[in-house]
Length: 357
Image (cartoon, rainbow, N blue to C red; front, side, top):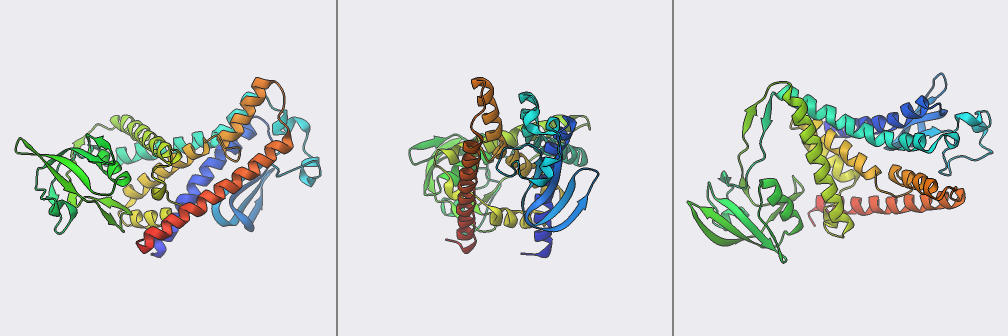
């Protein structure tokens, strides 16, 4: 692990967290909510600067951040909190209409999507071309690989793949690789060669460098020059494709599938370090992808996350009464414990992948 990789990881996390929390703070301030502290990171304070109203902090643990807003019902403050005593009632989040509270909660997610959209557009503008998704067609077979053992040759096209009672007819190589990550035992595949189809089997191989299962052949991607204004279309398309892919992955995780593919901080650090070595474009693409990931993750209706806070607000609006604050705080605490457990499990997965188990 290089120093450059570690720095790239810290910068990636910092940018995404700052943008997310900045969204919360800007919208909160727009509606007149008092913001006591804006923090990058958690834990002990490394640096603090007092602004006109808000204290800006950098803390020791870079995983996370927060905006401390007056009137948040998350257990972080009560009537005995010193700084809160001086805040007028009309500047507390609790005094605002429901729609304003919802917008404050969703602002971080919106900023995550906006950051990714700007990055994807910028990459397309800088490149000046569009890359088509590679087809599941063999361009080159790697020696002593699963593809070589399966007898695949240049220009062979994978028509379909079957495993564990499921079948896919991939339109792109990405479709096939996603199937392989979920079904990495021996696959039965239908191959087209010179207009003739035949059946064979192939056993994916785990690649430590990419931290995924591969088939052992290289595909070709094609590029098309585009006018500058089409970069906005391509950037929007990349954002949409990333969102759909992450939602599909989340669905698989919630259904109990692909749990062994779940990555935590260690896995993200490893991927970031490798991606940073590939150049600025690859690194920025990863920043955009993880920004979308963070946005979608925060929409999950768990009270510790933005989506959960919005759900509570909407339930209160429908019921026309306030849910017991102590109950909400306890559920938030339980949610944090569950999320911590999920992070520990993901980190365990990362370690197993690193040691090759």
